Length: 329
Image (tube, rainbow, N blue to C red; front, side, top):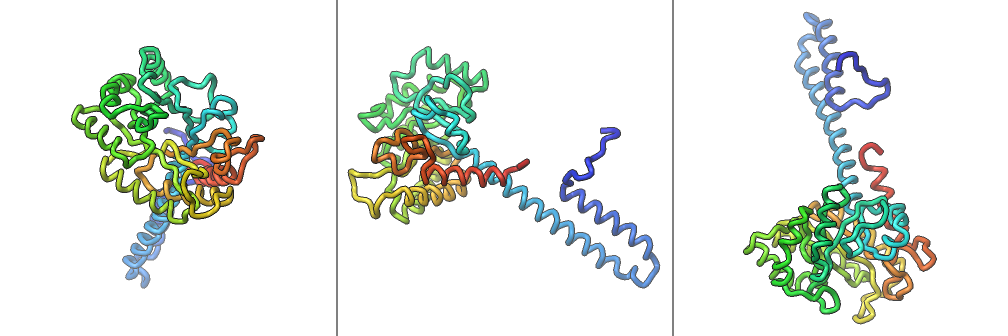
């Protein structure tokens, strides 16, 4: 732009730094032309090249780290019906980037995070719901849509893969990016059957959604999950969203150690580091809802009084660290 100039303290990219070094070197070379030092022109030129590569490499590495931090921050979400309905700002203040509550209806007001709708059951696939989702896409309120919730469970959507596939074109009609149905047990065969039908019928599935509740007291839990995710990604070659994961007191089965809040917080830190390092994991949502239920309280982000728990503090600290490292921070 004519007449434009940079502010005195504006950061300049590495290429500018290289150009300045080259310009100064060129001036020096003109002054030493024909002198004893002229024989060292090649050495000087090589030195300039080394400096430029070093400066450019360091700047590129720093930029890459900032982009990685931004990507990791965008992954962090929360699955919560209670807080999205009653105190959504609590979720945004701890650093969550997105939220969902197993429903297709948008929250009444802006929640300070990206809202992701879900069509949880077959009964939810109505003309009214589909029209509201189309409107949400057109307005920019929604970009993604999560498929049926735990169809392999009789206590949840309780659908066969064939039923889900039959209804899938209606979900496609919303124009939103579609996440697969999320089975309660990713390896029980339900997802594999649905994805086979999707391929046969040319249905659009943009990403795979999964639920995992592990024995979080087991030090090997995160490494085991990493192996599972890599295997599932190789099978379907699609991005992965973990739309439910958390630290739950699994009273119906033995746990390796006592499920304490400190162990839950340590698990969250280790888990998030692993998920943030996997490029094909696009999103994950920590489950937090009623802290009054003993089995859920150990991994809840807030206690019954609405104060941050050890796990909640760990979540917030990770988000704060990523915010400080992202671009323009």
